[in-house]
Image 1 (cartoon, helix red, strand yellow):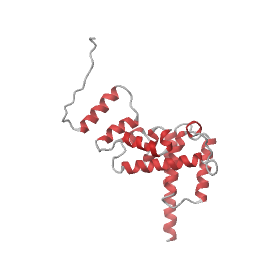
Image 2 (tube, rainbow, N blue to C red):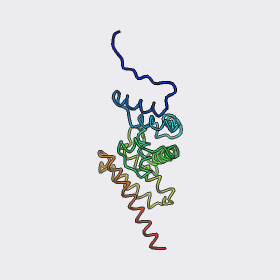
Image 3 (cartoon, rainbow, N blue to C red):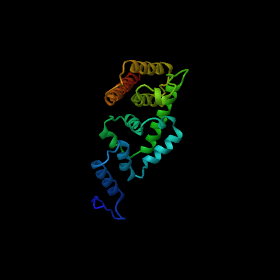
Image 4 (cartoon, helix red, strand yellow):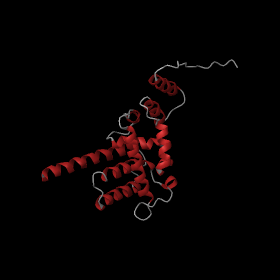
Length: 204
């Protein structure tokens, strides 16, 4: 009954940004928080309610029910051309975040459909139990998101994605150091894009 408890008292008219900062400082010293938890606090001051976005996504996009929410953040980072380090994810900018969130969820849905397609996809019967290396979802989502808007969704390109998928599975490429592997993928994709642009300029 005499145990002392430390209390942080905030006035009712305090700025919401100060509340978020206090929340982060208190929780960093106590219970560990995930990247998603911390980013939820950071984005709140921009009126972006990350937990509401996740709740709505789970009603609309099937894969978000089975994967950690950090996967969506990693897809956003890749689509923005950033690395997948913890610091980078925590510093994802608020500008266009909701649009990028929807884009990442849509890309993950396309990935889920391709992975679970028994006829033309990869035949994963139970996504939650049998998806090999969940971390492969991030670069695969970025790939599928890249080729459709760029009108590169040809059979040859899908065949290349298929080869990448099966080589990655059987070589255990995403078994460890997944962030680095995904970043390397992003860099190679950027190099391919530059080569393509160079060839286009040469033709012109």
